[in-house]
Image (cartoon, rainbow, N blue to C red; front, side):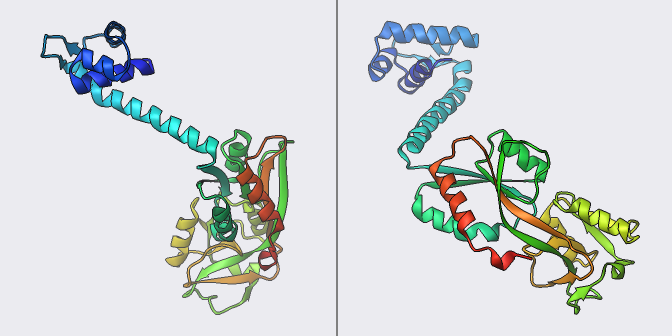
Length: 295
């Protein structure tokens, strides 16, 4: 199905007159008629009943009309978007964020960026470290912000923004809620909320095994929203990065005998051209003072 066939079909559908449709499309009537006939052959049936002064859509034509209109509208929208991007009116930015990254830490830079690029359109992708790496590798993201990525690819560029510690998150009604610190041994009898998308999952599991706590009861939640939900219901405790977005009824306790931490980095792909907006954001992130988040 060619675009000119689509235009001709829609014109005849609207005017129900081949001569008038040909004039609208600035083409001779025989050329328009041949294009419609070719389209009918492709679709396997007549689209119009041609009667003198009473041309009308067939049943097939009636069913095809909204679909053909959708194809036409999509093509026009795609062309318009391409022209807007080319002219700079629309500036897309695709960011891949680890599931455990709190977007709040990026809002000052994104807000400032929106002032410099009026047509900025953000697209966020969330995932586990391996998914972030895959998105960057396949061009699904311009930049990524995450902890250590899984998979060693020589074309990854990364710049560490800060290294943050992990804390133990508990409900305000938890037995340890009024504490500031806790030891690993004091987790005996607790239910751990396991976060499989966390970059430090293996470090947490290794620490619990080392202290003889590998048999603690566990819940598992892949979404940070679900982790917060379980914590809010006071059905377990969780190791979370200190920058995690937690509601006021949850408490953070430092773990005094465990050095759990992760570096948070911005990732790109070496040798791959970056758009001006992605380049600007990268420079802003590297120039930011991240001391408030450092362990």
